[in-house]
Image 1 (tube, rainbow, N blue to C red):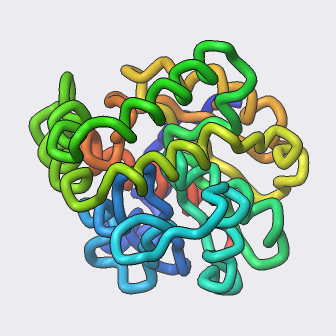
Image 2: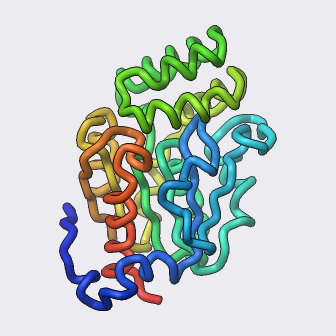
Amino acid sequence: MSYTILPTCDTLDRANAPASALARFDTVWLHGAGLAGDTWRPITTGYPRALTPDLPGHGTTALVMPPRVETYADALSELVPQGAVLIGHSLGGMVALELAARLQDRIKALILIETVPTVRDRLTGRISASLASKLFRSIPTSWLAWLSGLGESPTTRAELQHQMARTDRARIAAALEASARYDGRPRLAQITVPTLLIVGKKNTATHHGTALMAERIREAKLLRLPGGHMLHTDNPVQLRRSIEDFLCRSVPD
């Protein structure tokens, strides 16, 4: 199901909408591989109820073994407040999907940004994940930081280089292993909360997997925004507006 942003939420209360739609919930924002929780700053600044934890093996958080989406979800489940909205990007979206399937009675909504349920359903996905893991184990982190910014906008390139330079090869390889081994397809039918799936128009690599989720998650809406894989730095204003609009329309207090 596709989703179009309309001005309804703005006209409800011009003084407070749409920001009030996001501010009224506890939100848990889960970042992608190689990043850390503070990557969400362009969007979450000003929302004191927004939690931005580091995934295991990222930021200041220790690795968990084995590095799997399931073990990441084990480590984070106690952090999810009752009535929270789960928001995940890329690998963080896989973890959010896993948590949403486990914690149906504790969450209000699920928002997945540039997320696929698995890379194991396509040969290209399996090959690229394997190659990336081997590559990231063999080159210096300074090179990784430089490579990660190639072809990106200046803002996104700066953020990727800042984030990647703070980690090490083993941690990045572990995160890639977690994403490569996860298969969340059996989880999709278990998601019953309102769900928003957001993809960047420029990054077609995620479109197949996101379309699959849109078909199998009962309450899912699909939205395409200008930008690439790093929508929270490529297009933070429209991404936040889209999340606020979705919550205003689809999620009751």
